[in-house]
Amino acid sequence: MTAMGALPARFRRERVLIVGCGDVGLRCARELGAAASLSVGGRAPGAALPGRGRVRVLALTSSPGRLLELRRAGITPLFGNLDDPASLRRLAGVATRVLHLAPPPGQGAADPRSLALARALARRQLPLALVYGSTTGVYGDCGGAWVDESRPVSPATPRARRRVVAEQTLRRWGRRLRVPVAVLRIPGIYASDREGGTPRERLLRATPVLQREDDVYTNHIHADDLARACARSLWRAPSQRVFNVCDDSELLMGDYYEQAAALYGLPAPQRIARAEAAQRLSPLTLSFMGESRRLRNARIKRELGLRLRYPDVMQGLRAG
Image (cartoon, rainbow, N blue to C red; front, side, top):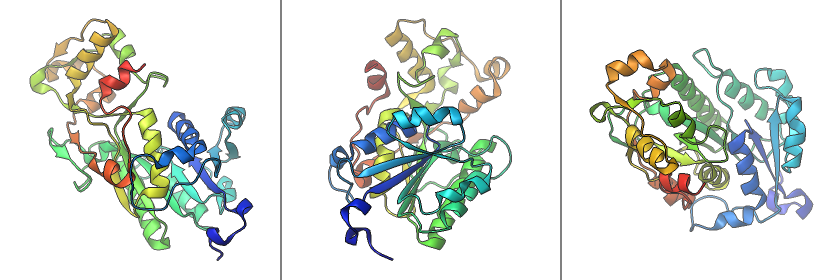
């Protein structure tokens, strides 16, 4: 097999395939379009990042209505559906690196989508790296303890258990075929220009929060910082590495909403006991109030060379 460095320049352009190219995927594509700037932040393990204009971005989509949007963003769309493995055959050998941000199905115990993608990518020349966007929910409830990437997973919800299966599927695939796979464990994503990306709507609905003695720690990452972490991981992440992709905040959930209310000039949310919350709030909202952990993020800074633009969630919200 010919090494990329030995090929003529016109064939050495990196091709990044984004699977699940929603808001974060589009932001990552913009980062990759200006890849020369990604080297800022110090030295880190792994391959050097490509220069400006040396990355072609492709995205898998199952929606004909998104084709024009992706093209306008400078992305080459590839039509296919993770729920239809036969439609993924064209992905074989198409990319040098893959960013997988698509969630598992909403039901079941496994993630057949990740399995179908892995099998499609194995049909021809393998990618040089695969990065998977998982969730910090895989840790389960940690009782407010500090959590780094060495902590064993203990998922408490069906959606978190599906994410654990997806992580295991992709990491086994990577080990078997010697493809470097990195897993990004992601908490709550926010940004003012992201749909539902700020706490304003919840505050306007006057959704209550837990009283302090029942409260839980919450974790965040700005969508732009997440996109930058994704881009760096494609080149810099060591094989089989896991990263907590979060900011430096250390906030109880109730304090977070109170500070956000003050920022927006809105009334502070009502504080209620957990027993009352169980009667008034939806199961999904309650599930986020049932897990407490404080995430350590030293690894993304040390190994990916990532300097957070928004190290504090309130700073990111104030930036607008």
